[in-house]
Image 1 (cartoon, one colour):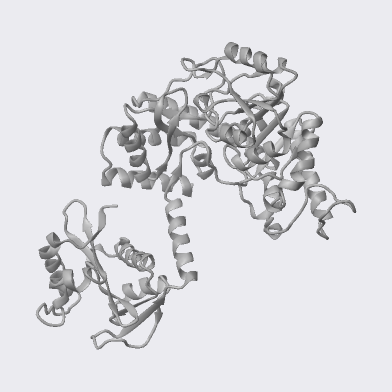
Image 2 (cartoon, helix red, strand yellow; image 1 turned 90 degrees about the horizontal axis):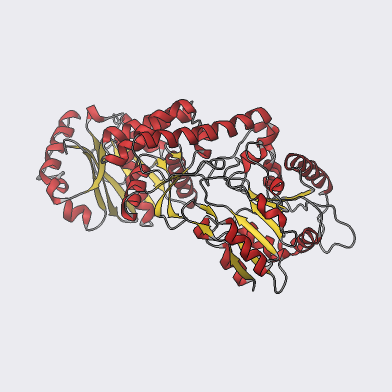
Length: 548
């Protein structure tokens, strides 16, 4: 954007006078600063003490391109001095000024806005009507011909804010590995299920609560679960839980017993920072796997020694961070420990056969979210290799802890993988884009954290600047460009850096052919300040990806 919207400042006084002289001349009107237009020379008193005044200012020349103001009159607020120079019209400046005024009014809990304009002011008419202003009766004695009114109702505010979010979303590219965009297809419309209470399993006279008319839904869910069981080579699956830490909490509430010991992948080794706290709140003894800081993985020998010393009831690997898809097959020799793997960061590639299944490594249970690496709904999935006492305990207790299965999300969970060709292509493109982006960023000299070559590379890319502050500054630069990354504390005592991923970007349209330019934009932002030229370049690049 080549201009900025700024609040009035006294230093703009002379520039504002020049602007209005030009704007009035272009409109064929006479400017009378000592009479009807005296508010222009008293902006501080007229608008800034009660109301507000904004200028659209050219970032390069610092000239004023447009203005808008608000001031109170009786029981409403009037939009005043809404002008944009003729050669600057149809560039979005007027729209941005009007949005700024409306947003200010909403934030300050104004209830009604009114505006007056000339009959020949067709562009103003269009903008007011676009934002929901309706014709109203005359409310002043000005030379205006047309009068508008906007009631800032809850309905209007909701739609205004929602549209702003959508516009911003459509101008950005998600570049972190833990967010995704679900696959939606109108031929798989499940919206009629939203809000229903549907059990995953059939109920009978011995159940405490049953809703009628649900057996056909349950039969449909049985089909979905059968498909998932086949895909994962699982004995059984469950789709009742929500995603993320909610799934962890429910799972442990269902299976943990008094006196249990759980071994965790710690945060320092890429595990989730909250899992230990969840378990401790349940009265569980927690021990941690040992990190190998040099190789950025688990220190297998030291961790084995801990397992043999403490004989944990459960071993839980929640690999929420990792540069490599580690081989945990050594864990299979511990038959007395129930082994759980959180596959959320790798689930698409596991389903697609590009990464080894945790079941093949010796894990007894896979838990995953369906909206991170996998392009599904915000939902959890639990799969088990065998039927055993742990699984029976989960199913029995889940009936108490989960009251609503969120049936629409269960139905949508299968949509990506029933489109097998498209899903496999998505998984492959995601891997290729991620690895090519890492290589390209390295070629530009960005501080990419090295990964070892002893196991498959994940889709995570870590960028570690010289200091925490520089990492954060770079994160903000990319955000300014519409490239949405993830600033966070990286594992293995590395410090604060950026976590990059391509899952959502590929869903938005990112292809391997785009990687060279993406890396170039990211590199320019790393080495230089963000300029209007770079903003324009990034905006056009993102638009090209999204529009295909």
